[in-house]
Length: 616
Image (cartoon, rainbow, N blue to C red; front, top):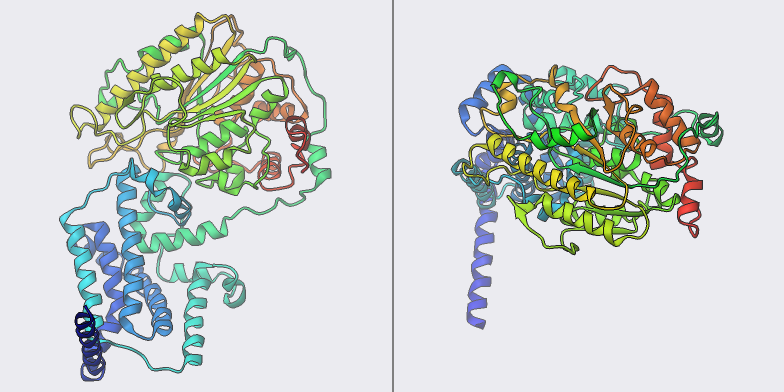
């Protein structure tokens, strides 16, 4: 063994000596390897998206200034790494790994849900296990080839061993200059505040014709991606996200909140004596395609049972804040009764919350003698739900490994029938009236589990029909219970449907006409006689739906609930993706900031009533 180790050490020493000689012997080669690397890694990262060189060449011809921007940004990063690591191959290895990793993630992300990679998506890094369960991951010959080419380039740099010989002090100063320049362009604090002149980002983007147009929906973002390419898109949207970060509203203080909550409270019909069970079902990827797919000649019975439920109750149209992914946006609006728009439309609004008891709508039910429960048939770690939602006032939280009924799967996930059976058991086992929110999983992508893996849309409709059957069976079971119960059923977003000839492509959906894909049919149903005449008959933002249900359940209003009810009458839709030109509402923005990021001045009393030991 010792001889083997000695030979290994000798071999490594000889290799390094040879590489040291190569540094001076192949000066021209090393110069070319170093100077061409930014161009090389940009081309490889972009080629991984384009799949074929012809597409990349076409983009370079049509948008040469954007490619120059990509190369210059890569050169700033490479210069910094080269100065820090001294040896070229180490800098190339680090940058190659980061660029190709981001490129591969972008490739798989867009292939999975039709959304392009943003910096904010990195917050899901701790949920890779969850994401991998539904991501479309295809290891293609092109992908393997491009990764091997990058590896070979770094391998060549390792052998020829380019390096720079500046003193440490000069290296650090020069590296800092590269970092500060990059940060100033992207407007990354605190560097931007130190080195950036006003408007430096917009000036640089304008110089290289990088598309900086506002993108208020997924389709406009996709169009911006096509204009900018992967790398410029990622950098520019990072700048946009940093500039759009949430700030304290002007004039935010206790007096402003008190003024907003002042006024009369209408308690007409809000006696709180009926106290029915309230079941909120947010159905994963449920969407009614019939209004938008007439030109496709869509003939389907997938929605037959939903129509039957609606005929016994009430049907309306909700405007949800997301498309194809980021379920937690809609979930946030339904749990808090607050608009995502007021938080500047983050993909994961829960990430903005302080670690404290939250003034959710569950607490209003809790205050009125309800037991509260949250049911989600998936991993408790996804979106960090178990930890974050433990502050929401739920007495019971059940995830996929907590179910107490027989569990069945349909496609890749626990089926909706199982979820409804679990809800029935909770209703039957709970002595108090029950408020329950469930976020289902059955109809989450991938949609390749049917008879024809390539017929995504047909498979999706088959699964939706199964949900309708399960919902109808659930309402029929509730009819047999001697407990008044109200059910709200609504989808979180339209599904992600991939393929070169997707339904959305066939419908000609683009950034200017996609508002219809943010409209969701919702259903209100009860197993006892209920007057639905007060339910608004116009489109309604999803965050208002809980207040509609609370009125039906005769939950007494406090000043906050009254103000939100009043706002529902005067501003029924408040959503960026649906009405991007609509003016900002100072009351909604300030109350949302207060309850999520501020001092919770409007919810302190509610928190103290439902968690007496907690002091804000």
